[in-house]
Image 1 (spheres, rainbow, N blue to C red):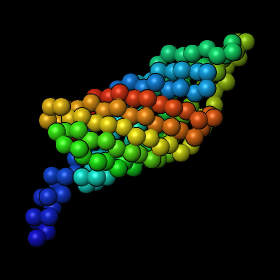
Image 2: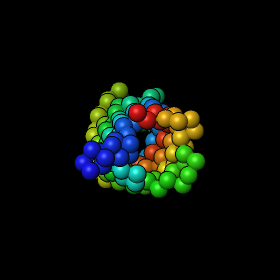
Image 3: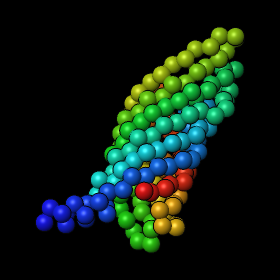
Image 4: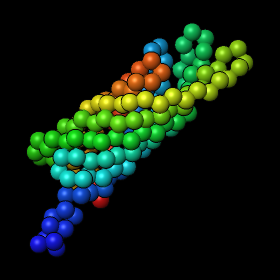
Length: 155
């Protein structure tokens, strides 16, 4: 029995990696980031995942240049398979971001952490290869909205 159940679990439990781009919207500042995600399916409906953001470029608001340095987050993801490799999901977790602001020749770096939650969809179009779209809202820096599109590879 244990051997059979272990084999069934091995078929369900899959590691995955995601690489993509993110749009980070915070008040009047819109930033871009490179997104890296590592996760593991615990079963058909739940997964855990870690995520990293690396800022790309900057934006100016009110004469202040703002740049996202990096961010990290961890999530629990609930997934609903809909068939033909398509699924929708909701996720909740905790994240940390570091940003930098420059004005009048002075630069200040600030980091903040907060709760994050969101939803998305995934389409596994060719076996272990897929596309994923996510929206995540973080309760930090007066609320941040992050939109991500990424390539997913399951192992």
